[in-house]
Length: 423
Image 1 (cartoon, helix red, strand yellow):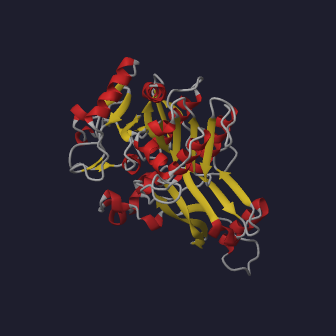
Image 2: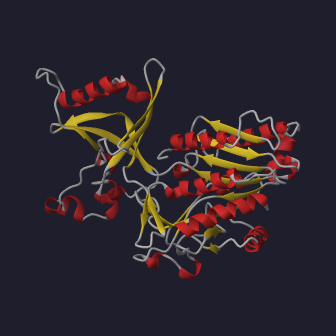
Image 3: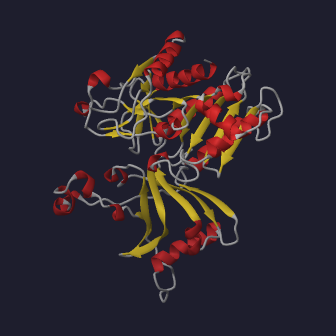
């Protein structure tokens, strides 16, 4: 899955195969609900009343990328191109001169929906953003700061170079692309207006290293944790004591806003549904009690020490590849601004749980004080009063088109989530 929509489809498919349903009737009840095809919740109803609390692991399934603008297609110097608007915290220079794939959902004029994927199969064409040759880049790029060398408006996708056969036609290179889109998929230019088209690296996920101990691929922030969350809840065979919820959210990379992000009321709807499954009235008081008494893991990645840039970390409190799942007490930046800071009691509870079940884990923060920082969904759901801490896989090259994780860390992340559900 390369997009949040594709991730939801895969999650729903795997969950339904394991007996999850939007209207669960068996015991233990396995519940499923998705939100606008971009976020989804799975739950197994436990034996304890929900108002006493529940166990929830929350990950996000969006990733940094390029989105097509609503009027993207144009031509210049006899080439056809697509304009983009980057999504999330990318380093723009990493997205030029690499093969790119297009994944999209398009609502046509008649209201029908088209899911489009181009560039993932060996027989597919790929796309790219042309970089400037070093012979001519001295003034335009080389003398600038790294973040300014590639301008956002120049992240335009090369999509064609053949003109429309009619020499009397205007914008023949653009017109030829429109002709191809119409013949193959029945699209017209106006369909771009009601489309969500994402441009992602066309790299395959690969083993990394002579010893094949690492995983390299796009979107591991945060789909590596989403994968572990999914496998953990699907592996539960008996009814748990506490109701367990796996929540997969959208829009984390741009602040968790919108109706599919962590700031939406989706979790409240899910918990209300689960109260009904337990034959409890979903009153506002019952909902508040259930959320307040919950215990949560924010399943998100942390930055492992990069051997080439070790000085941005304070090594005594930094994550390392191969040291197990990473627990992060607080996020934010500077003086812990915009942070969720887990209590000593909750950290102690998680520590005891992991140690008793032989989970290999490490504690880390994201970089040196005043070096930078970052946030997760933790603070947005901690507002309900639930205990919350970040816990996920450490990555090198986070937010790049090819992030690197340790296979051992991925396994320990899965193990940590499963133990948390059962504990």
